[in-house]
Length: 458
Ligand SMILES: NC(=O)c1ccc[n+]([C@@H]2O[C@H](COP(=O)([O-])OP(=O)(O)OC[C@H]3O[C@@H](n4cnc5c(N)ncnc54)[C@H](O)[C@@H]3O)[C@@H](O)[C@H]2O)c1
Image 1: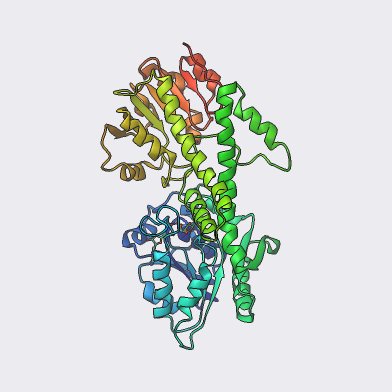
Image 2: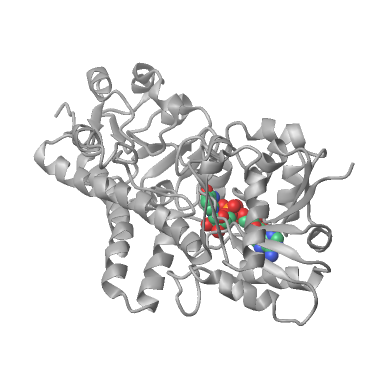
């Protein structure tokens, strides 16, 4: 069968996999190939057990895989055979050299740019899907257009706004699709090619275009704004705990102002995930690079409050449990950084687990989808750690439960049954405010919500 377009994505991760699955599903007339340097990951994409958990993703993959969606490790052939190339490799925070701990590590991205140049025998549209510092497209163009060959490259920025846990829904019905390009004749033509792909299922008015720098910057700024709302409400949750105000009541009252809006105003143990922290630090680094120190300080405080909130959670536990956690058994309900994903990157649970172990507590971790990643995250960490799939068994003989991920199943557990098997006094620290606190208190628990008065029997 002859396909209308041949599309490649380099990087088969949380973004590359689902994004390309959606394009293949919505556009059977296109051939979509996803390549990666990690053969184990590609083997999983080709198997019955996908490398990532996302609601609805398995159905999407099954519908298109081996028809017009292919996963492969053959990067060279992938580049040669396709003229539209998405780059969706990881761009983590740099851990070495200049900018360590702040700047984006662009080595994976640059390797990809060089490979595209090396293997291209025809002109390509290269699309930045990864989140990148503003002005990266300039470097991409400099690498790609360095040789004098007749092959030409147009670089577009098309940042991905999906949220893990709702990736399929977000891709199917995005708030917007952003495409940034050069405003040259060939840049605008490349932009149109990409608009045409999305227009197969996204309404035109939701496909917005901009200059390439605005597009690169908008992605980082979106994440910074989302994280800032979380840190804002978390900062106020600390004040609520000192004043007997209730953060849920405060966020409801504040969020009903239509200028503010009610989303992303839930107090919690703090944000996690692979993006928020790294993208804000990247923003801070960029601002400092341009001498905008006040702007940098402002955004850096969002990350500081997030760290403070996690540390506060531990100190609250310590205070509530008579200032010692040594030899106490504590059950962590949830390890994923949010519900409906198995992803644990930058999850507050990693920090909380490590801190509890430093206090010499024994920890039992339960999570419906993230235990494999949790094991990897805590490999080599000293202390007593166990991983138990069933939450009832996990809580047995524990002195406390720390609820860290807002999985729906935790709302509906039989807490009477759980209480009956726990050491007494039994405590619940609700880092997501999803439980029925009054009911847990009536059962006998001492209950410590986030940003609300504690309910204790002392
Ligand atoms: N995870 C999210 O929710 C999310 C959302 C929006 C944007 N983003 C951005 O998208 C990008 C990718 O994120 P992710 O979560 O999918 O990362 P990921 O780590 O899950 O996937 C990246 C993949 O790229 C592969 N890779 C690295 N170098 C390669 C190379 N030279 N050739 C081929 N493959 C290579 C890795 O093996 C890995 O499988 C990042 O820039 C991230 O900031 C992520």
